[in-house]
Length: 395
Image (tube, rainbow, N blue to C red):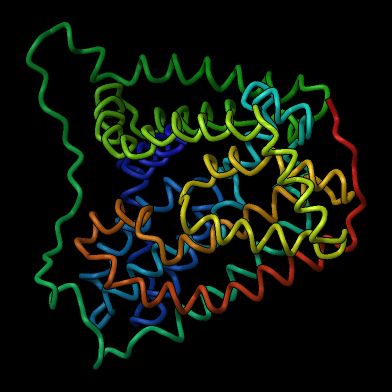
C-alpha cells in the first residue's frame, strides 16, 4: 500500500508525464467535455495505480482550470476523484487481489483457507473487465450531465486560486563528486538490470506471465518506470522524498489492523462469523451479502487492503462452504468496498490539497455517483456469480 502511493507519486510527478498532461489539457474546448475527460482519465489511470490517479488527476485539473473558461472547479475535482471512488480496486493496485496472488503476502491462517488465487482468477476475469467498463462509461456520463453550465459554474478564479505550473528544476551542482547524481548513466544501468530481471521473471514463470504478476513485481515495475521517467538519480530521489509524507497516515494503520486480524483468526470469532454468513445466506444470495457487507464496513475502515485482512478469513471460509468462486468473491469485495470512497474524505486529502478545495466542495457529486453506482455494482456482482463455477483452493 505504501509503495503504491510512492510509486504513483513518483511516476505522476515526472517531467515527461507532466508535459503529457499539458498536451492533454489542450484537447477539450468546453467545460463539460473537459470534466468528462478528467473523469475518464482519472478512472483509466486508477486501473494502473490509484496513487498515480490521484496525482495525475490533480495536476490535470489544475492545467485545465486556466485553459477551459467556465469550467466548474468543484465538478472537475470530483471527476478527478472518480478513479479512487469507482474502479481502482478492479485494477492492478487492488490490495486484495495482489495480496491473494502473492504467497508471501498472505497471512498463513488465511492461506490455509484460500490458497493462492492468481490474478487471472480475479482482475483478469472477463466479468471483472466488463464490470469496470460499465462503471467507467456510466461515471463519465454522470460527470458530464451533472457539470454546471458556464453561467452557474464556480471556477478556480472564484476560489481565489491562481494557476501555478509545476517546476522540475533541480538545484545546481556544487561539488565535482555530485556529477553522477545529475547524470542519466546510473539510471540507465540500474533500470537496465531491473528490466532484464522483470523480463526474465515473467518469461520463465511456469504458470505464465499473468500468474507471475504479484504485489512485489508490480511495485518493482512502477519504481523502474519512475526511475526512467525522472531520468536523473537526483530528480528521482527528490520525488521519492516528496512522496513519503503522504504515506504516514497509511503506515500507522497497519499495526492496528494486524492486531484485529490476529484476534479474529486466533480465536473462534472467524469460525463463528463464517457460520453466521452461511446461515443467513444461500449460494445464490451470498455474493450480494458480501457486496453489502463490504460496502458498509468500508464506511468505517477506509482502506481496501487493511479491511480485506480483517474480513477475508471468515468471508472466504463462508465462500468455500457455499461453493462460490473464490476469485470472484475477491472482486465483489473490490467493487463494493470502493463505493464508500465516493463520499469518504480520507482518500480525498491528497487531491484536495493539490486543488486547495475542501471535502464539502466535491462530496455532493460523490453522493450522486454513489446513488448510481450502488444498484449497478450489486446487480452485476450477483449476476456474474450465478454463472461462475466454484474452484477449490490451490495450495
